[in-house]
Structure formats: structure tokens, C-alpha cells
Image (cartoon, rainbow, N blue to C red; front, side, top):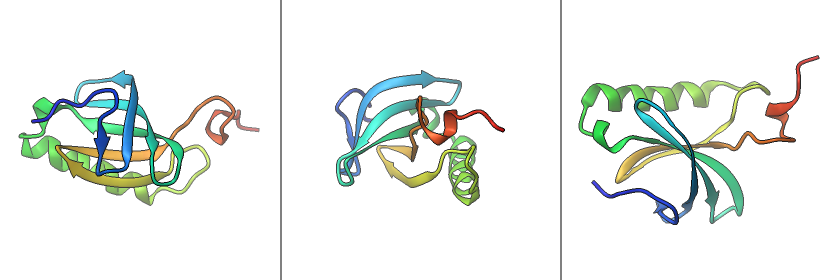
Length: 104
């Protein structure tokens, strides 16, 4: 299983810039879509879970379900793939984005 880190490029397109957060089964990286020239969030399934069928199925289901949601308070899903490790590419929610605005 390849090690993912700063400057890793997934699918020839998504460059990992820095680790934002890590949890039980996943990591979230700030990344850059080299094709469209925009900042993105990249969620990766942790390497130790890629051989667990249940964890992989849940990660794939999360990607499908998240892609079905269309709401200003939920990050938009841009892509899903498996390049060494499964990954989910999403809108980057940061200060000043529609995701950070308080509800009125």
C-alpha cells in the first residue's frame, strides 16, 4: 500500500497539500485539483482499512450518499476514486465560504 503524504498526486490530478484532520478510519487533506486549478478537500480511507471489505463498502456508500445531497450547508462531492487508497474529493469548506455563513 503506497504511503500518502504531502505532494502525493491522486489520479494524476489531486495534489495533497497538508493533513487537516485524521479520525478512526479516515484522513482529510487540503488538496489542489491540478486540472481545474481549485482547492479541494480530499478524504482518504486510512491504509490499514483498505483490506477490510466492510470499511471499504462503508466508504464507498458514504461517497454515494454524500454525492446525492444538495444543500448549502453540505460540502459538494466532486469525485470518488481508488488510486492506491480510496478517496473522496469534496468542496473545501473554509472561512468565507458558503459553508461558514451562519443560518438566518
